[in-house]
Image 1 (cartoon, rainbow, N blue to C red):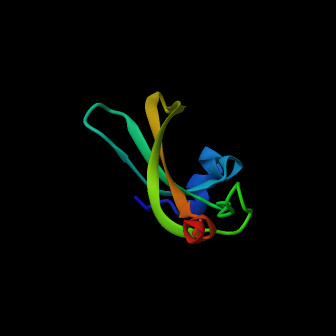
Image 2 (tube, rainbow, N blue to C red; image 1 turned 180 degrees about the vertical axis):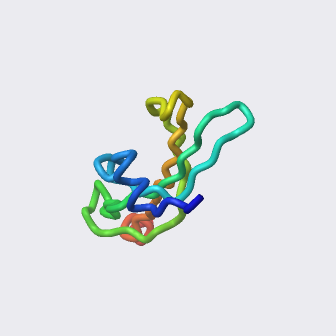
Image 3 (tube, rainbow, N blue to C red; image 1 turned 120 degrees about the vertical axis):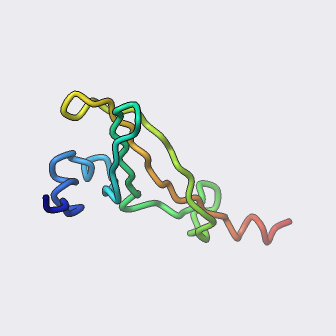
Length: 91
């Protein structure tokens, strides 16, 4: 069977509407579908000073989604976290 491209999977699951793109998927031993994705357009700006911060790392947010083909779905979103360099310079 041919492997689906991310564009096809994004279209089927409509993840672009959520602001994410699919990077992987798998079934676990409990017959749940896990879908991994990343944020398409993260806002790096500090809410305090409005200056773009520096990427620190990513954190995984696990969200329950509607079932796909009768299987429970867990959406794993890799959300970027930023550090405000302006606030670090003030201390």
